[in-house]
Length: 172
Image (cartoon, rainbow, N blue to C red; front, top):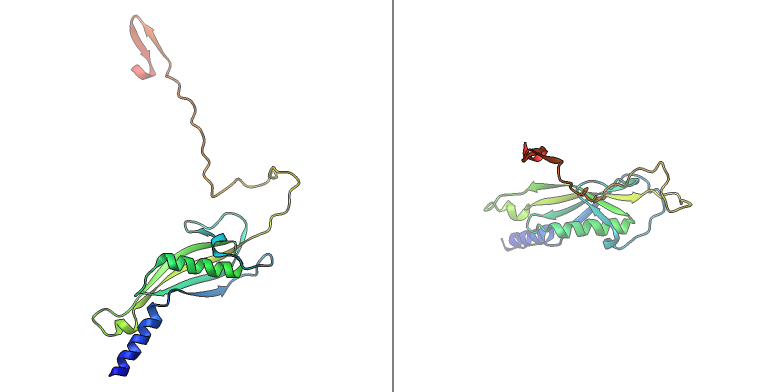
């Protein structure tokens, strides 16, 4: 019986206490030679993929046992793998959860279930060098940016006084 609990303890340790594991599935060839880079230099997107021309070179999946659900650690694991692959950006496209056994069932210790975070490793397509600083006339408008525009100065609505009675759009 002691060997059973030792086995349960080893499975518990191996399934949930060692952090995130990342699976990599290659998708497309990179548009240029890739060099590993630090994970903090990898751009991370979650609401939409970058609009800049790019190639999805790999699908990444960070897995973590339900005993230790740590989303920031999973994002860090994905960024580290993207950096190892030489990717310019990481698009986190989804998450999933697989339930395990339910306490007090003993199988909960053997199969706690898991969480997964799914991302795409992105490499930007090299842009041709331009002669000047201005973008070519056919360049698409900038995207993934917020452009603040000053509001026009507000002018009072036209009005007039006729026979001591105000008349105008504000006084109708």
